[in-house]
Length: 340
Image (tube, helix red, strand yellow):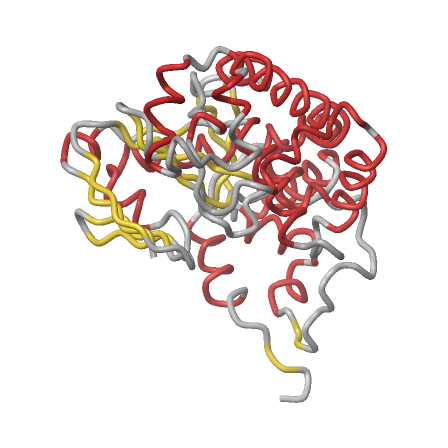
């Protein structure tokens, strides 16, 4: 368990950001966690990423994250500099890490006179080591993640919009209470349910929440920054990494989905997904469907009066009407056994 005590100023400054660099880090952790075969929907992507690491020498330095273990200095995964940075912007921060930051963080993890081999170059030849790692991450990103990034970014934009609205409407307490099944909020302590043990206190800082497609339920955190405490969590939308439905998908339960029987499988998927308001593009990324298919289902659900459409800034958000929520809650929650 990781327990983080948040004082009121830190809690009040809760913000949300995306991070391509943290996505890259966590994708490498996922490959390391599943050395033989990654679970669906990561399976096809993982095979491609392993080929990239095996066949593209320029990406090799990115594998440093496989050597770090559970605890390592946060300068190797800096907090995002803005709410929606590009990978280039984040790698620029990594490249520019001052020697003073490295010197400050290292003693928290290792004795300066007994550094592991993978970490020593960041002291002895800092600029070269940082540039080598950043170049490797860029090569890995270009080949292994960039083809999926437009869909990933759409899904993450939906997640950020949903969480930002919840934060504005109900405050940080409600947001943290509904963040993830393995994130427990018992004010003033935020608990991350992990095998690791740790206890931290955040005083007059800013809590930064980072949703990740590649989290696979893992919860990473950054506590070395003097002003920001960052915590990642699993975002919706990982299905977009699946090339197409195959035998790699989990087998379906031998039960009758009553909502699908009533309204059709595609519309039942959309209804369930709309328990959080979303755009057409975001729904398509989350569900792994073509935007045209989602638009067709939304049109029918709008006509039936179970879905509404509202404009928020430049986006058009769809959400459930009370009748749609009732369908999901009363009919869609519990499939019935086919043998019942």
